[in-house]
Image 1 (cartoon, helix red, strand yellow):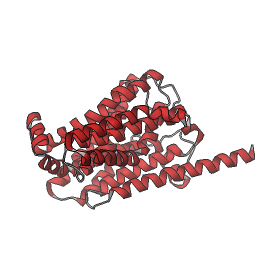
Image 2 (cartoon, helix red, strand yellow):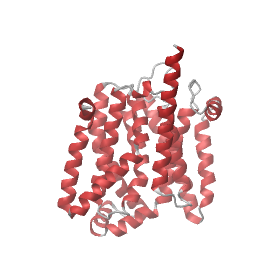
Image 3 (cartoon, helix red, strand yellow):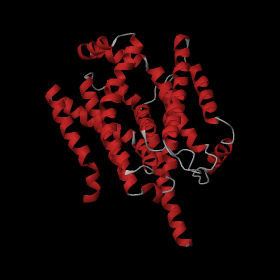
Image 4 (cartoon, helix red, strand yellow):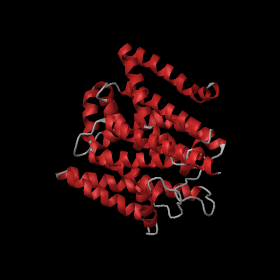
Length: 339
């Protein structure tokens, strides 16, 4: 137990700092909000931790440490503070200073403008995550399957060039029918950018990395490209959390602190999974995480036309991960009996 807790020392320390800072900024209610947002972000993003672990398990200690330090700063202050400002600036046609002034002096309006861009955020994040999902399951050399009836056909589709992009773009066009007017075209454009972003960061990871011949199709090499891939993936997971947080508070700093706590724990869980070899022990856990990513992408797409409670999103991911864990345990027991 003590060894396990060492993975969470930094997360617990940051949580204490965030709670004290929120109390100083806006009182005890803000401190409670930080704890709630942190717990919500952690529970909704556990599948992100598993996927991160599939990438990091092939990295050396230097790049893992960079992921925990530089990556943490980018996740907390970049993706959960600066990036929403950028979205509001684009959506509201505002300059950097005007956006910052709006966030500080009129956070309610800031939240409204951010929410008005929900369809574009959902399209970009959903398309990026759907590409992550398909890229894993259409890998031609993938031989192990959890849901064989679904995964085997997807693997056969991997023989087709760029099939993951074709499938994702087809889904984007189909989901765009839920919208009308300018929102429809904005959704399509944002979805295309999500596909482009995935291709660029995955391509950059391959260009700057050193994948060995025969490596799994979904593996991302360590380096700047792989680092960028993980950060965009993290952003895609956090989009809905950032928007949903405004239902609890309009204070931008409190939101950043609360979601930052969640981001810290996701990274701690990631390193715990890597260092304990959990993905090798539980063979289907990785599959469950990627199915959870596909489910989240689908929820983001469908959410532009219908209201889907965050509890449904979190529950779907949890059920898939717990199910894959249970299947892994049964498979391990079966293998032990036959050996």
